Structure formats: structure tokens, C-alpha cells
Length: 87
Image 1: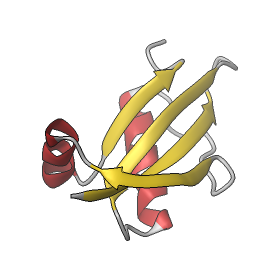
Image 2: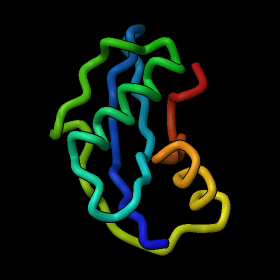
Image 3: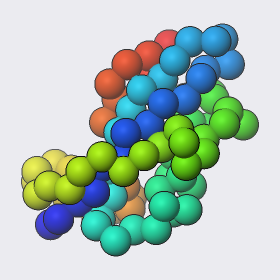
Image 4: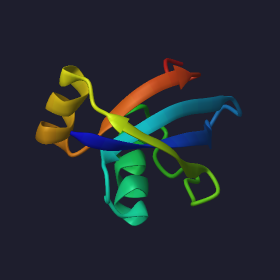
């Protein structure tokens, strides 16, 4: 499966920075990508934090690993947590 990776930065409620990738099927609309990002932020207690096209940018396309492909097939997206997501 071909996937698109969107590099995303969001300011947490405590002022820290979250950095994560939103990974979706290629040709997923950017509005849908940001909706997935907002859904993820809710799971981290960060609902309502700004997530705009400036905060979530297309990075690249690649082939999905079996693990990522499985998540995308079941959830529509996969989040790769990179920095400040566990706090």
C-alpha cells in the first residue's frame, strides 16, 4: 500500500511541543488528515489545540510496513509519535 506522511507539530496545553507524523493512504484529502490529527489529539487530552495546514504538512510518500498498513485498514490512519507525545 502506498502511503502519504504528514509531518505535524502541535503546541500542547502546557506549552510543550508535540511532533508526530500522520500516515494515511495516498490521495487522502488534507481536511481528512487534519481530522485524523484532531481525533488523535483527543486521545492525548489535547482537544481544541490548533491544527492547521501550517502545522500539518505533506512530507513524502512511501510503501507501508505491514503494521502501518493494518492500522490504516482498520482506523483510516496511523500516528507515528516522534516527540512530546507521551506527556
